[in-house]
Image (cartoon, rainbow, N blue to C red; front, side, top):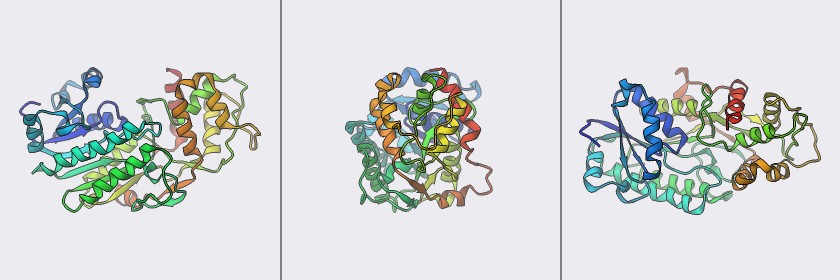
Length: 352
């Protein structure tokens, strides 16, 4: 790890989308050195991403090969002790939030949470432990979901959502002893400016489907067209998350990082159709969107991801964000409207 001083640890780099942006943002700030634990399988990709950083900030970032799901994060006893001694902020982004994740990956969320808490408890300088969860921790709940809500009464759509619920429970139980902040971003899409994205799933499935369809193809509408989709670009999610977590009053609280004006499924389909040059969806269409997507030849290898995404489109939920708005008001950090970056999303999907 090297003989660096005060540090911020980011887990989940480079596989988790927020982690990649966090490393860049934190390195550019220059207040603390940035360190991260990367699995051996992702080490080459991590080095590639770091080599793209400006030379003036690259020296602030160091990596160690390990695994947040393993004992002591997969580090040696000496490495773990050195990290615990100097870390002041932890951004735990290693949790799997993809609804198509396996049961084993879901179980890994709980193992990683336990290891991160062990590190936090051993860190004498710790000022903040930021847990990057997901708004989908609400599972099957519909209607208005508050940031303070966390229950399993309505059940979950998949093992990943349930694991995030259990992970948040574990963190909340330690909130009296540790400076914990829980962030719940909505459905994360790519960078609203550059289009950079880790995985072309979620809303990108609809875009890819349209791009592969004939130019006169009219996409069918789902049965529940009024369901709202709260998507947030990763660049906004990270800027908002950093602002919130840095605020003194964030400790011990949970924050929804969402689009304050979520669009409906029907409106999103209209935007995507327009951006891809396809006809707008009909108001009432006898065809079935789920059937069309599941049978699409280009999406066959994404069947589990497609099915999980369709489950989300059936759940009508509004995420309360009053805690987030309280700490973001006056900062200039605003969530861009989907209309402003839909062309960027389409351009990125076309390059795949």
